[in-house]
Image 1 (cartoon, rainbow, N blue to C red):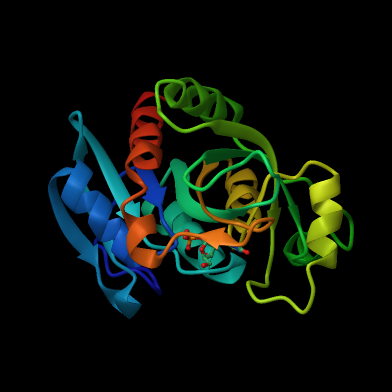
Image 2: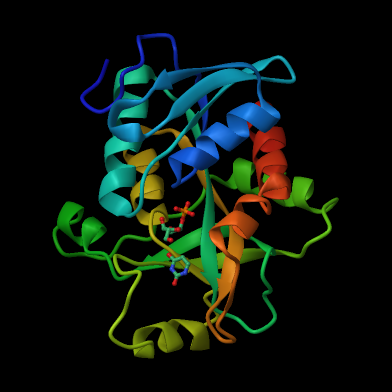
Amino acid sequence: MSRHLGAKKGEIAERVLLPGDPLRARFVAEHFLENAYCYNEVRGMYGYTGTFKGVPISVQGTGMGNPSMSIYGTELVNDYGVKKLIRIGTCGAMQKDIQIRDIILAQAVSSDSNLTEKIFYGNNYAPIADFPLLMKAFQQAQGKKGNVFVGNIYNSDEFYRETLDRLHKFMEFGVLGVEMESTALYTLAAKYGVKALSILTVGSQLLTNESLTHEESEKSFFDMVDIALQTIIDE
Ligand SMILES: O=P(O)(O)O[C@H]1O[C@H](CO)[C@@H](O)[C@H]1O
Ligand SMILES: O=c1cc[nH]c(=O)[nH]1
């Protein structure tokens, strides 16, 4: 057991999918994995291990925001020896040609979080995806109905904002979408020498104010999860 995970040693696979919502972890376990069992209920942050095409895979909720991702990601790697981590998240689209249910592969992460400044003595650090995982996920996404976009995303410590001014500046520079966990994920992966990628399904469009309800968005994850699973078993 680690501080925030109740799994015994060996109960978590080397390959882990990471949704923010713990109920999305249950959804993936029930719909995609074979012989899945729940190894964690601590804080209701469900984690499951099963197999996909015979390969052991775990799926662990991370909660919302960089601090929560940092706790689960660090314990998965440090205490359970996890080597490959793919976030399966949702995001808000920041470009007008990106639509609800499209998929974004986060190649790099810009942020308003000061997480990396604290680590790097006030200097700037550019968190990036593992390239083989990114390339494989891009190939897997080609067969899917929705569009796939690859590029820079915006990671934020805020969901509710005083103003959208800062977001507009990032939009102007071509940033694709906004979410809240990838800075922590990519930075801890670099620190520990493991592989990480964030795959995001667009759940809202910031320029048109369209958004999926929670129920609709939970039904929109099949392509993202399939891409993540096909990618993680190979790479
Ligand atoms: O759907 P998840 O994976 O939680 O991701 C996005 O949704 C949450 C906000 O609603 C934040 O965690 C954000 O990053
Ligand atoms: O983190 C997120 C996710 C969706 N929409 C946002 O504005 N932020």
